Image (cartoon, rainbow, N blue to C red; front, top):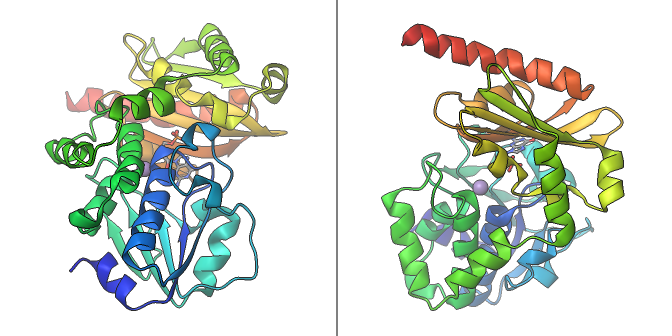
Length: 321
Ligand code: 5GP
Ligand code: MN
């Protein structure tokens, strides 16, 4: 019996939490787990609390039932998915503090082990992959498979990032066998863009700047530009992926303004720089090839600070070669 199954046997109420600005893996794992528990143990009182997510994920079963505000409810068991530290839980951390027991399911190398029990597999492509292994496959129905497949698709960039393993593909195959419409899941939740999302992508690419001899590229979107185009953080998925694919680039940086002098920063690397180390230094976290953090100062300050760390790693590597 897996740890998840054991913990579900000994509880009558469960709260599921994920990270701020929930992405495909966060939503897929939270709702996959929600639907699994609902079908396995309908007697359990349960809720998912997450910030508002992009409506492109509305096809996931249970999406409309997600609660976006804190309330006075208490739950016995708190399960945190895809979140490497307590801060990532945002305001919903209060449910973790009030729970008698907790389980953290994650795949971030920077995970701090903040749960009472932690299942952290940093080689797994996604939290959905970790979660699949905690489930009884015969109890996974089509709706649960749609959730898990969505998370895997998003965290692997449609099965191509270095985190994609033979095991990932095997799991995806098991999920396909549940009858999901995998083509539409990939198109609708990953590739499709609204008109304004395409416009902001175009703007970000047009204004991008390379530095460190073309080994790095960055682009920044200010709040006044976000207002002009009518976009928010959820509309900027995918910009970093296009920057990353610029020929000759080792590290791509994308940031958008979240406060007077505050930026949400995304980092991606090709094969040398460990961006999780860079992000972790600035209070964030993530994976070796994909990480993020929130930084203060002007765009200039942010780039200067990041570039020092990136250059250091690039130089270390050159010395090794
Ligand atoms: P993204 O750039 O797509 O927002 O995030 C890339 C990866 O880094 C994801 O796995 C995400 O969970 C992690 N990440 C992004 N921002 C932060 C942050 O502020 N703190 C931590 N701990 N992880 C982050
Ligand atoms: Mn993830």
